[in-house]
Amino acid sequence: MRSFFIAFTSLMLLSAGTAQAKVEITVDKDNQQMTVAVDGVARYHWPVSTGIPSRETPSGAFRTFRMEEDHYSKEFDDAPMPHAIFFTKVGHAIHGTDSVGRLGSPASHGCVRLSRQNASTLYALVQQQGVLNTTVTLTGSSQVALARNPRGRANTAVA
Image (cartoon, rainbow, N blue to C red):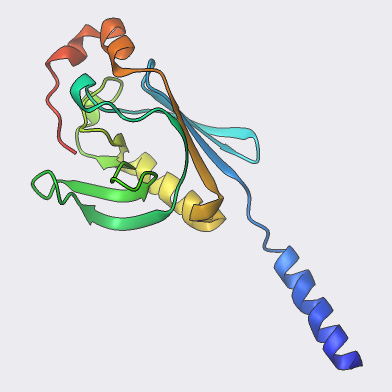
């Protein structure tokens, strides 16, 4: 019985040492900006592209639930979605893009786009801390973003 107690205590101490931090991803659609905080401390601020007005990225609070390093859109011509982190059951995700010139204005079909480098950094962080330990909160609208940045009006969407 004593050896069981020692083994159990050792296991509990080891698992306590690997505690995961809470990752909070906040997307301000008005300003097309993402803030990533770990345990309440802001770590990253990045420009993003959210959905165009006809394909608005949903607002609200979500919990991430799935990650795919090399995902391709099943809806939009196999468009690449590298380092995809899914936050809605209908397919909205945060992912990398090659269209970095569009970052800072709405340009997608509803996903949240980041540069490939920033998407890779975020993916590694969420993978390390746990996909179920990550929340995504989205506020604002693409209409406000377009009013602030008229160059985004001509954007066409791809994933």
